Length: 521
Length: 74
Image (cartoon, rainbow over all chains, first blue to last red; front, side):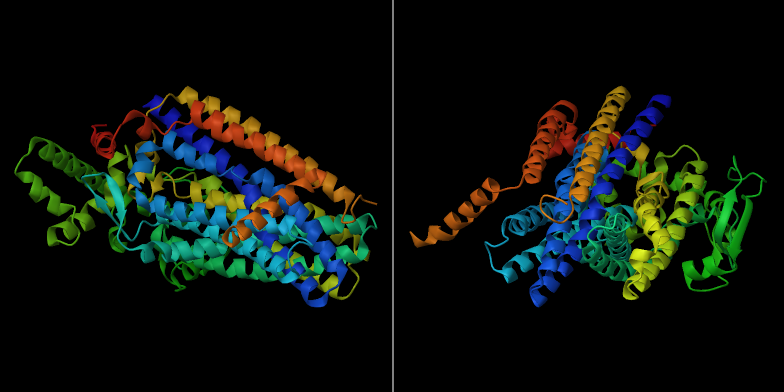
C-alpha cells in the first residue's frame, strides 16, 4: 500500500509540475493575442505607424512566449499514456474527441496564421494580416476550449455511458459534454483570467518603460489598451468565478467545503474573507476549524445555492453523512461502490465463461432499462468510492485548497482595483508621474501568475481524490509502474522546464530592454 | 499549371519568411527544434511509452487488461 501511495503521489506531483509550468506560458499567449489584435485593428483603421510599432513589439514578446511554451502541454498527454493508463483507457473517446479537435485547430489555425502574423508584414494586405492576427487569437482560445471541456468532464462526467465490455466511457451526447455548466463556466473563467495575465504583463512592461523615461507615448497607449481590456476581463472574472462557485456547490460539495474550510455544515453559512485554519484539524475531531476569521454572514449559502438560508454541507457532513439533510455517508458510498465493482467483476467472469447470467448482468449497465437506471442511481454512480479504504479518503488537502482559493479571490478583487486606477491615471494623462503605481504594476506581474496558478490548485487539489468525479480515484487510475522511474522523470522535467523558463525570462528581458525601436535605444 | 500556383506562392512565402527572419526569430526556432527533439524523441521513446499500446496488440486485450485492473481485489 505504501508503494502504491508513493507511486500515486509521485505521478500526481509530476503531472502537477508539468501542468503548472505549462500554465505559465499559456495564459500569456491567450491574453496577449487579443490585445495585439486590438492594437493592430486600431493601426489598420487609423493608419498611424505608432500602433503598428506597438503591435510588432508586443507580437515579438508574444512570439517568444509562444515559442518557449509550444508543445509543453503534449507532455501531459504522454503522462496519460504512461502514468495514468487505466484512466486514459477508461475515459475513452471523451478525451479523444476534444483533444483531436484541439490538435487540428491548434495546428491549422495557430500554425498557419501565426506564420502570416510574423512573416506577412508588407507581403500580404493590411486587412489580410489583421484577419490572421485575429484568427491566431481566436484559434488559441478555441484550443483552450477543448482542453477545458475535457477537464470539465472529469469534474462532472456527463453525456456519456460506461461500456462494461470495453471498460470505457462512450460519448452519447457531444452537446452535453461541450455545454455542460461546468465546461461553460470553466472555459469563460479560465480564459478571462488569462486575459488578466496578459493585461498585467503589458501594463508591467510599459510601466518599466515609464519608470526609465523611455517610449513614453508607446507605453501610455499600451497601458490604455491593456488597462481597458484588463478591467473588463477582471470584472467578468468575478462574475464567472461566482458561476463556478455555484456549480462547485451543486456538483462538488466537498471541494466547496475545502475552499471555505467548512467542517460542520450550516444554514446561512458565511463566506470567509480572511482567516487562518487550525493546524492539524481533522474531520470528526472537536477542534475549531479556524484560529480566526472575518466572514460575511450568509454569503456562502447565497453564492452556493442562491438562498441566504440554504444549508451548506461541511466536510464532516459529507464524510459521515447527515440524515437530516439527506446526505449519505462516505462509508455507505464505499459499500455501494464495491457492489458496483463486484458486479462488473461478475459480468467479466460470466462473459468469459459464457455463463447464462451474462445477459442479465448486462442489463444493469444499460441505463435505458429500469434495472439499469436503478443500478446506476444506487450503485454505479458511486463506482469510484469502491476503491477507497476509508471514508476520510474523500477529503482533499483542506489548507492548500482554502489558502489557494482565498489568495485567488483576494488577487482577483485587487486586479479590478488595479486596472481601474491605471485606467483613470492614463485617461487623466498622469500615469507617468505616478511612480508608486508604476512600481506596483511591476510587482503585480508575478501576482497575476500566482492568481491563475492558485485557481488551478483550487480546481485540481480541491477535487482529490478523484481523477473523474465519483467514478475513478487516482489510486485506480494510476499505471502499475516503478515509482523510481516517475521520480527520475520528475527531476528531469523540473530541470527542462526550469531551463525553458530561465530562457524565456532572459530572452524576454533582452527584448524588453531593446524596446520597440529596432536596434534599441 | 495554374492550380499549383497558390501552393508555390505559399511555399515561397514561408521560404522568404524564414530567410529574412530576425535574429531573435532564429533563436526561437533553435529552441523549438531542441525542445521538439527532447520531447518527441528522447522523452516519448525513453521515458513515456504508451503502456497499453506497447504491451497489448488489440483493443480487446487492452479492455481485458483494464477490466482486470479495475476489478481485481484490493
